[in-house]
Length: 350
Image (cartoon, rainbow, N blue to C red):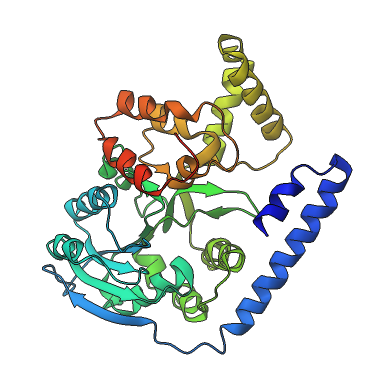
């Protein structure tokens, strides 16, 4: 199948549009089949819950972290992230979709977590978050609920800087970044709910309807996109700390007003022109990929997406200077990223 899809890239231009339309239709069909199959699947999917050294009793700030690693390792880049969240004051529920967490890593997790949960890899992140939320003894007393996953490297900048911006006076639900793909929504790798959202009927209804669907297409369209829509329909304010429009506006300003394009090499000039045309045409771009360096260097965005470095699906040029951007912008130890890439990359270098 992968060879077939790769071959599609060599199709004549007039055949690419119908090919991608057919492929998209098949993805939607498969997603619908997986949704129907979820009614036949029997839970529960949590098979082990270990208490950590911390406690959820009277917890006001709770963070549910979703993890997956084929070998069950909790890598240093993720431990760094957990230590920052713990240091900020969150009680951590660590939910792993791995087959089994490495025993040495369980010991490291024990000191900073309230619960260490192992579950079957069913339902992607939303299935894991649903199971994690169910383990909170008194959700009604929680003032801040943070849902994160391990799809990012960082925090490159201290996470407190970003979290301090996410106050309940400005929004009830916060994301780090937003996306206009399909329709406007907060990207789900980092979602913060304040008390008004947590206690709302919309919140409880949404999670009650989440099913353990084995289709990424379904999860993205119905749950990632659908969560923002459900909150917004309930008149809850949803906002991104690093909005797409801010990055797009900065690029347009740099090209039109400051003539920054002329100062770039030919490769970057071509790429900037393509981005400018897309923005001008209203085509939504993935800000965490296309604006990654601007976000980190100019806006103190705390993450770089793992997918960007591991796969670079949008073919962002000159990505090899990621290490230099991070090191000149913060004191983050890029060796944590390098070590993980060395263990996971195949037929690719960064």
